[in-house]
Length: 192
Ligand SMILES: Nc1nc2c(ncn2[C@@H]2O[C@H](COP(=O)(O)OP(=O)(O)O)[C@@H](O)[C@H]2O)c(=O)[nH]1
Ligand SMILES: [Mg+2]
Image (cartoon, rainbow, N blue to C red; front, side):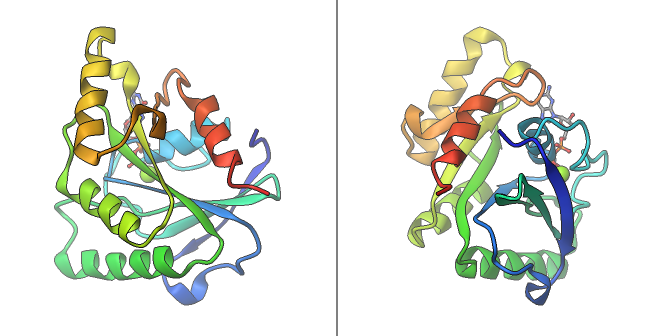
C-alpha cells in the first residue's frame, strides 16, 4: 500500500533530477489519458497530482515519494498537438535521456485509453522501451466508460496492437478503483 505520499519536486532539466536514492516508477501516456487520476487513485489521494482541465500543461517530470520507499514520477503527457514542435523535441530529449539513463528506474507504466485503438505514439514508446530492455507495464484505463460487453473486445484489440498477453497488462478505472490492487501488486514485485 502507498499511504504516505509527498510531492518532492518538478524537474525540467536532467541536472535537477533528485539523487537516485529510491527505486522509481514512471508513469507515461498521452495528454488527458488519465495519468494523474491513476496515480491519485493508486495513492488514495483526491488531487495530490493535479488533474488538469488544460491538457498538455504538465511540462515537467513530477516526483513523489511514497512511504519513504519509492519515487513515483509523473512524466509529461505526449501527443498534444498544440504544443510547439521545438518544445516537444526538448521534452522528448529530457524524457528519453531520463528513461535510458536512470539507474533506479524499475518500470514504466504506460497508460492508454481502453476506448481508443492503438495510437502511433503509444506503440512507438512501447517499442522503444522494449528495444532498450526497460521494463514496462501497459494499463488500459477508463474501463468504467465502456459497457461491460465492449470491455473485452477493446482490450483484445489493444493486446493485439501492442503484442501483449492479458496477464501482462491491467484494466483500470480511476473512477471505480478497478485494477488498483493488481497494479499495486505488480509494482511491489520490483521493490526489494
Ligand atoms: N470516467 C473516468 N474518467 C477518468 C478516468 N481517468 C481520468 N478520467 C478523466 O479524464 C480527464 C483527464 O484526466 P487526467 O488524470 O488529468 O489525465 P492526464 O492528462 O493523463 O494526467 C479528467 O477529466 C479525469 O477526471 C477514469 O478512469 N474514468
Ligand atoms: Mg496529468
